[in-house]
Structure formats: structure tokens, C-alpha cells
Length: 264
Length: 287
Image (tube, rainbow over all chains, first blue to last red):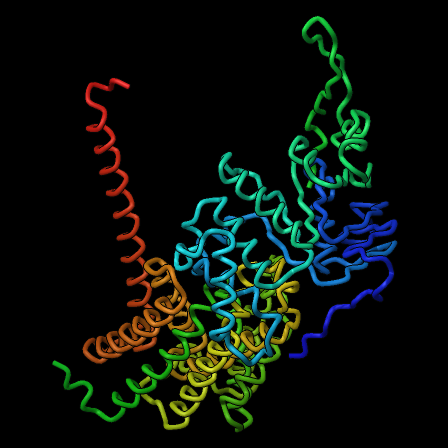
């Protein structure tokens, strides 16, 4: 059981945690996402925007080394940790919050060793960090949606992942849970981790450092203030721009497209 | 009432069942958790032509069965264990082919037709010391592997997409699980046969799954239930002169049905009680 270490990018080739250059990824020969070029630096939060089927999850699978690039280049300085979407099958899995956090210790010890006292302490410390140590013995499926996301963040902390990927972490969360999670993401970035967050919420992404707009190809990448123009949003979400009357003036808005071409 | 267990052949059968319960109970939880129930049935059935070959050519039955089961594990099993799933049709195809080849070999090549029934449904009352030794070996390996690799099996099942990034990059851990299930299936053959192996390997774990929320209690409960159902089936088959393998399978199936019904009933009662409480909490329906 030789777990080969992941390819480490040569150090000094600027300090990016992730570098993608004209990257194309897909499941067979035909790529579902092309032309992706961006860099994630330590301490940055990048919002990944795009419609369903736009390539957000595909990009994450490439970042997790689940998919190989079909073209272009993708370099990760360190291994990424992930906070996946909650799938139904996971909810009745017989694991506690502590068990999930402990999964973050696997990479750090030889395969024949069980998690010991040090690993359990690290898992408890990470759960405390996300405010859930009191619920360490609770079943994962019994936690609320926000608590489950925070347990998975704790797992990434135990793993000491310097790149953290979050796939639609705010979906289905109430306001308080969402704020709490957002604050946690800010803390992760503040301590020098690179954070990639797939989201549907354009307004939320405005608060982050960069946005990456995907719609089967990279539409735009850059700071939200200058990047999130109506043209970019229209190209990202495939809608058309319309003019709406507002308070005596006019306002531009995007009309969402019909979902006749929705495929997965 | 229990003079049945005064007979040495009954005592050997009981020991075999209790030892098998440890192996089957431990692995059964992983089989259910990782969605490998159909694979387990397939690998047990695939062992059947191996048994026929061993019987006809005069080499060790366990060796013949394990040889074929191992091939099944390394081909069909590896596909079945993958997260994307969808290999049930292949499993079914190979399962049927294995049974057919076994029957043809037995009836037309080696003309050992009388043995076929024994091989398919087991011969619990003719258990030898070798059978018990094999069961004990598998039980020990199952416990050891669960102790060492359990967290990896759990992680790969909980989060297949993240398993690699969490450090479960090598497929070896899952391969060990597949081969162990094949070994366990071979060990249960002499007791309950190729067609009823799932009665010990899958059904008790599926039953206790309905009642437990954590891995260790689930595993302990599964071992206990497999042992209880095996013992009850053995005793009942002695008293009623029914074939023991089939009796155990019927008891295990009945146990699952009872627990599933009981759970559905409890859920309905809880729901009704909650509705009544909600109704009384709102007198007159004034909001």
C-alpha cells in the first residue's frame, strides 16, 4: 500500500498554491470545461461562479486529482482538502462528527497505524475551532446542514489543507449558519490558506478577493469589482440583458435563460 | 429440549456457525456499508464451479473455490467496488455463467450430480475440523483487517470523491476487502452453500443496520445476531429434520422482515403521536 506523494510544483515558480494555464478537463475525450487560466495565492478567497453544468464541480474534481487535464496545465503546490456537497447517501452513514474529522488524519500516518491519542486531540481541536466540539459524538446525519459543512471544514483543518475547496457550501443554509460559515472562510484565508468556493450567490462573491466565472469555458477571472460586469454575468449564466424601469430611471438586469437545454 | 447439541456432529456444526458469525458479522457490515451485497452473492456463486472442479479432479475444495472466487474478486469485484457503480448486470451475467458451468461440469464431465445439491446448499451436519480451521482463519483476518483498514474503508465509502485527497490513494485497501469477502464466502460454502452464503454474510448486517447508528455497535450486534440466527436455525433444522442451511436463511430473512416492519410501525406511531400533540397544542386552531 504505497501511497505515492503528490507531484509538488517546483518551489519559487511564484508563490501560487494553484496555477491553471489554458486548462481543459472532461470525463472522456470531449472536455466539458476549457480555457481555464487562473492562480490561487495564499490568503485568497476565490468565488467560482457559473450555472449548473457550467463546470464548477468538474474543475474541483480536477483540483482533487480525480480527473486528469485533457489539455493545458494544472499545478498544485500542495494537496487540496475538500468540503463536498452533502449527498443523501452520506446522511445515514454510521459516523460521528469526530469520525469525520478523524478522516483528515489518514494522510499523516503509515497505513498500518490506527488513529491514536494525538490524532484524536487534533480532531477535537479542529471541531473546537469550528464551534462543534460539544457535538463531537453526534451522528453526522443528525447535524444541521451548517453544522455538517463545519464538520467537513474541520476535517480539512485536521488535514492541514492549505488549499480548501468548498462545493456550494451555502446551499440550503439559514442566515445564521451562512454567516458563521462565511466568517470561518475569512479566518481560513486570514491564516494563509487558499480558499475556492463554488457558489450561486453573485452578491456573496463580491466580498471575496477574486471571482472565476465558468460556463463550459472560462468567461472571466479577476477581482469582483472590475470583473462582475453585466456582460460577464450574462455570458456566465447564459441570459440576456434587459432594461428595467426603476425609481424614475432605468436599471440593467439579466433575464435568466429558459431551462430547455439543461443537461448534466 | 437442547439434547440436539449432545451429538458431536451438532457440536461441530455449532462451533462452525459461531466462528463464521465472527467473520460474516464483521465483514457483513462493510458489505452493506459499501454496497457490495450483490458482489458477495456473486462471489459465493462463482466459487461453485471451483468446488465442482476440485471435487472432480481430487484437490482441496477450499482451494478450488477460492481460486475461482479470487478471479471473480479481481475482475467483477473491482468494477463493483468503484464509486460510479452500474456493474450489476455484469455481476449477474458472471454469476449465472458460473452456476451454469458448475452444473454442466458436475453432471456431464465429472458425473458427480449427487454432490451438486450439497455444494449449492451446504452440508452443515458434515462439518470437519478443516472447515472450522478455515472459518477461524477468515474470522481472524476479518478482525485484523477491520482493525487496521477500517478507517480507510469507511472514508472511501463516506466520501469517494475526497478519498484520494484525504490520503486513501491506493486501491489496495479496497482490494483487501474484496478478497476477504471472497474468502469469507468460500468459508461459508461448507456450512450454507454457494446459494445461501448471503444469509450469513449480508442479511444479519442489513437487519442490525436498521437499529444502530454507529459502526462498532453495529458490528457487535451483527456478530451477535448472526450467531443467534445460526444457532436457532441449526437447532430448528434438527428438530424439524429440515435442511440446516435453508432453515438458517429463512430465519435470517424472517428476522429482517420483523425488524423492518417493527421500525416502520414505530415510525408511523411516532408520526401519529406528533400530529396529536400538534393538534392539542393549538386549541380551537387559533394561530
